[in-house]
Image: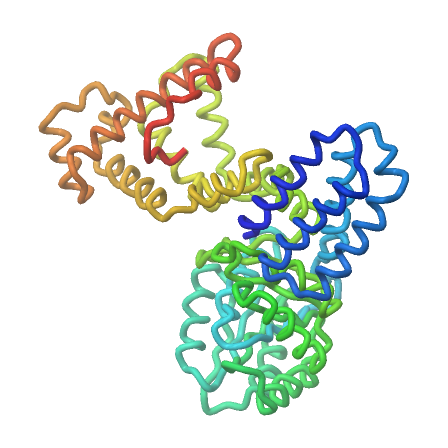
Amino acid sequence: MFENLTDRLSKTLKNLRGQGRLSEDNIKNSLREVRQALLEADVALPVVREFIDKVREKAQGKEVIGSLSPGQALVKVVNDELVAVMGHQHDALDLNQKPPVTILMAGLQGAGKTTTVAKLARRLIEVDKKTVMVASTDVYRPAAIDQLQTLASEVSAIFHPSDIKQKPVDISRWAQEAARKQNVDVLILDTAGRLHIDQQMMDEIKGIHNAVTPTETLFVVDSMTGQDAANTAKAFGEALPLSGVVLTKTDGDARGGAALSVRHITGKPIKYIGSGEKTDALEAFHPDRMASRILGMGDILSLVEQAHEKVDHEKAEKIARKVKKGKGFDLEDLRDQFVQMDKMGGLGSMIDKLPGMGAGMAQAMQNPAHTRQMKRMVAIIDSMTPKERGRPELINGSRKRRMAMGSGTQIQDVNRLLKQHKQMQKMMKKMGSKGGMANMMRGLKGKMPPGMPF
């Protein structure tokens, strides 16, 4: 998300950083560029106008014009206004109410409500250590009920069964009662959607809301609909007392207009953003961190949190100890690294959070070809014997043929993997030696092979 906006703003503000001092003229030119960048990102016009007015007002004040580093001072003004537009701080779910805390999910059909229910359930189970029950009141699509049951099993949530012959209000009441009897911490209710807002849908969801009085009412919206996402959220907000918004499909949205418009138009905070189909692809939304990412300054805090939640620390420490002792980095270790990277959303997701990497590089690394390449390599390593993984030098022509057949790949793929492993071994050796990281970075410079998924 925000790739196009990040590129435009980074170039504009980079030019300003080189200015000895700022004048009304160069501020005016820069703000024109910022305005154009926001409009191209599909940010709602009222939001753009207010944003530019506030930045102009602060930029022409003494704290910027008289600053020792005026370019950086203006970058801070833009950063602060981005944070203000998106909501200042992360608004967490209110989980401190008497259980079961009920969360009602609303939104149009196709926005990703059912998948988001599963993602949120998984996050509450794994991060917040809550017991979670899920139920579907979508009696119009039997497939939606079946899908939620499958996803509930995948994320270890309790599934409350429902049937297309039942009434949505009754399902919600029965689910709440079942959650109470089973001492469940959180109940998440999935609701029916439509292709567009209509009175029947609004009446139905109002009825459910009145029946269960949820602690949280979250509006799930597809970020790729841009300004329409904010306008749809506003319509739902007028019908329901929304407590927050979940933006979905942010991995497919290069513009990011919805994230910058929703808070301003609805007055409701963005609580989570979803990126991808996997049930672990849901992030808490932090306006300050997102502003930093938009301006190309990265988001190290989220990366650290992600690593803490998803990385197998025991395996990571084992590899670190091996490297420190100067022992070999074998193919089993390489496989573990690929698996850990996949758990963290792939290389594109990680690069997106690193400062100074640029939106273009993150976008390039999101290429599905990199994911396929990584999965091929894991398949090749899986087709090896434990001895071959530990001692790659044993691998000869006949073994390569067996591995290629076993993994459904070509001998060239096996050769490519072995070559890349050898390069990784050298890097790890440099890390384990004196001056470790500096040596490794020098070794990396200009030597990354094409298509290497690191």
